[in-house]
Image 1: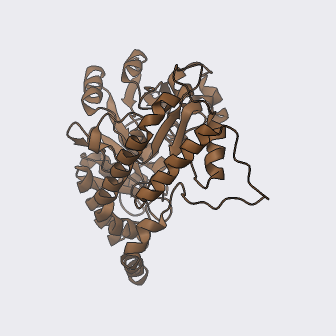
Image 2: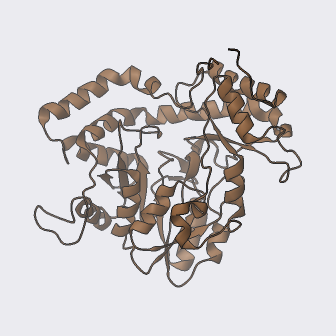
Image 3: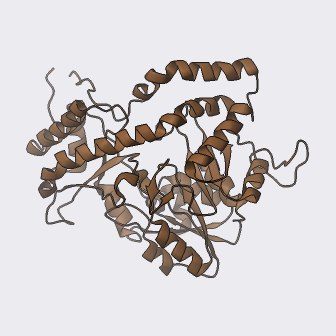
Length: 394
């Protein structure tokens, strides 16, 4: 059988890069010519620029988003004997980052309508050993800063933001990365601000945290050949920083495009709510930067308005029509085999488990055209009308 060519890819990074490819090439060549490949000038410049964009004073580039979480928490003083709250509905990097500090991760359920950490549930599991909370600004939407600060002040908790999916997101007058002691970002290529490889950063207002991070990322050495603690080798490559520095001025424009695409989806998908297709709730308006656009494929046992087509069948049908989709995330952290030792079981976090069975991520990226969005929604309409996956002719 012949496969239908992809007409709407899930992500198309070429659309971002083509208009600025000459600037990117020049920036990369400047690093190559200059020869400062590690901890070079382009990194220093990007660290300052990105921190300023987040509304804070310091940025420390590291090798990836996972390192940003692990080293950032460590720089904030989190370690063995501490408990750290984080949502069960997140990418495993958040959990791995906490574990790498030696702290005990304490998972919390999420809100079903947003996927964000349930702060009421978080408050219930706070103990005298709880030192920090890691709110994950998921899919491009921030957790409420006001509620986070109130919780942290009440129980004397460190707020360490996981903003890997929320570059320049805003809520309640705060920008992602500016709420707590520090925040972790990822520059994985498909992020709102993505490198051409791996990369990450911790941003903070606290000079002491920034200085410790610079030491931790560089073998625990505050100065060359003088090691005050056991650090690691985790530095954002200068050449990647140069690429990111070229792209940063375009980020607000790209985020606006994402928001406009989401608004188009919202309008076109509105009639499908009666068929059990519900977009994840946007509680912040234009402050949502839509790293992902997710619809919930409601199950019969959980909604009076359930979808007549199972998610897997729906996804297969869309693929057969040339539309790529994703699932974020199919298995919650507490049910991953690697973390069985934490002692959690099926049923511990019902909202996270429910969303893992319902969520379907639709194409979302700057440059996605109105015609392509219409194609996605048309394919969804076809799939709902024909529950059996499309049979392709030989």
